[in-house]
Length: 521
Image (cartoon, rainbow, N blue to C red; front, top):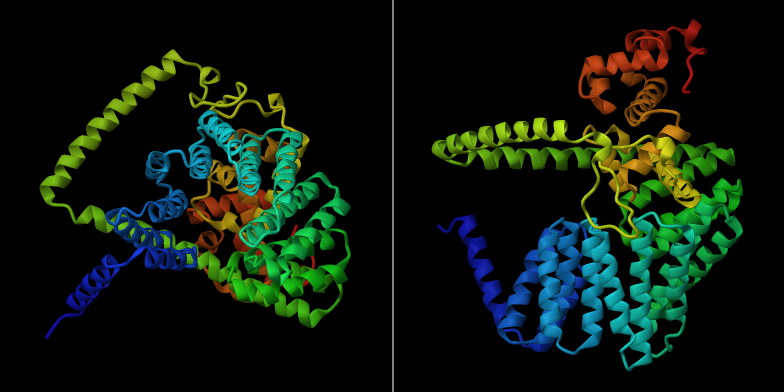
């Protein structure tokens, strides 16, 4: 009897054999299928795309190679394999020859890869090459569309290096102007209006950060109008994101009826797109809005939906982290005993060398002398050590943008993850550790660790007050639930933050005579 694993292997051989016989039009069809796959499994998409790449290369089908390589670059960036992404960019440039459209895309994609690596100088140079090449294009529609994409790259670049709002908005408006110059012919219509919708949405977000609410709503409404026009075929995920932003914007303006209107639309359209993290955001704005409107039944409904989805997402993140740790352990155990011993000797030797280097390095250099050796623009080299925050001059726009992102971070409850660090949070918020540390210290009046621990304590206090079942749990469970590494650290932090121990807090909650004195603040 044939085993299951043999059947799977046989199926893979037959599938690949059938793929090898594809002609050029069939390769194009397979590429379209890959482009329509869900984005939640980049490794799977890379595996399938690599097979198609080999087939296209064996047939000498240049267009197929170039198209699938562009897709592979994005996926390799998603999984953090930037070296491979740059290798593919180099291959594209060799294959492109004098095809300026392909060269523009290659320089543009390479710029985004370098930006991920914090190689800011190289990224900026690639964007300049892309813009120069785009100007050579003979077709006006090609030229305007490619320039719009390059200007969009400049927007990302200047946001990444925390440039002034003037620089960011200048290039966003250049992107918008280039897109508007594209003719409405059938080959470019969808591209044009997708680019316009993204540009209007980005300008809306910038105006929210600047406090220009009226202009923000104007731009977001224009973006939404494009998305909802069926003749433009805009993907639902963009529409859902815009609806969500409009709901939050109207909520902040205390226009709860409008907020509810857009939240309802966002919930309805999200079901067609499948965006769980945005769905959580939508549930949150919905329960806040209906609470403000005194609609208790709806507020309760969305509160429960939010809690259920949030718990589910947190558990998924924990499970993924656990699986990755498990794979790491299994991988280590699969080696032979002799190889393990060799690795131990190597690691001990490297550790000794590292310790010696650190000792010598500390004697030779002061902390203030340490600077980032990576390339940067306009001399913006950033110290690896966080300097005195008072000496950091952060643009007002950047400060508002980071504070807005911190507010969303606080609502997301991602602070209960044990492995969250200053550098990982800075990366998530698309800023650097210097700015983030300074802004937390100045506006939250706390160090980074005190800020995170305060959020964790507030989170578990809310759980204890609102859900009686939590009062039955052991202190060690409560510590783990809100992200602390140990029961002891949790207990010390809790008392420092509240003035009482977790046990006393719980007993106070169960004592009706003092319950009214317990606060969520």
